[in-house]
Amino acid sequence: MQGKGLWLGVGSLVAVLLVAGYFLGVGREKTQSPTGNITPIVTPTPTPEVIPGEGEEDVREITIEADEFSYSTEEISVKKGEKIKLTLVNNGNMPHDFVVEDMNVSTSLAGPGKSVSVEFTINEAGTYTFYCSVGNHRGLGLEGTLEVTE
Image (cartoon, rainbow, N blue to C red; front, side):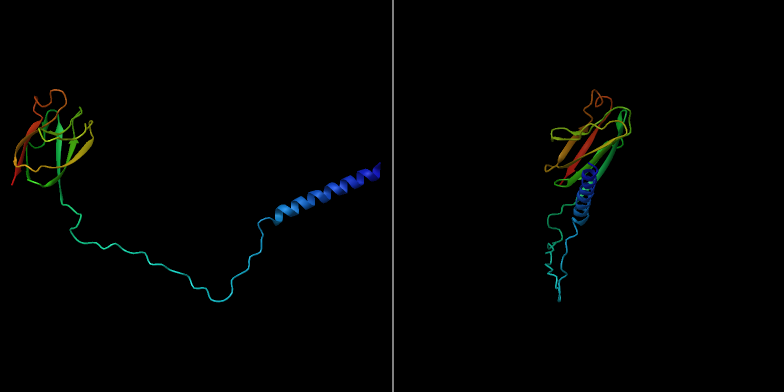
């Protein structure tokens, strides 16, 4: 019986060594180093041609501040066809916005201490009213004039 136990122990040891040897050898495949001269293939990346003025538009940036119940300016003057980016900075304690009457131009609501922007172009000369559309803010003084000149 003791002879069987010895062979069982030796067999188990051999099996463990074979499994360990297999796992230690995995990932150690031999690769041959290339011989001779190696020339990398380089393909140049085409650079797009930039033509000054093409696809670029000048944008005039205007910043107006709002509080309870006034804008920092009551008059804004722009040229017909001029691209405008208007930023409304809310220095007040209530939400405010900026709407140009009859021109489908408006910012989203700016919460207290927040800023919002809108980009627009007005293609008709004239005088337009801008205002805050929140509650009765317009009636309390949050309005002004946008003059669009030729």
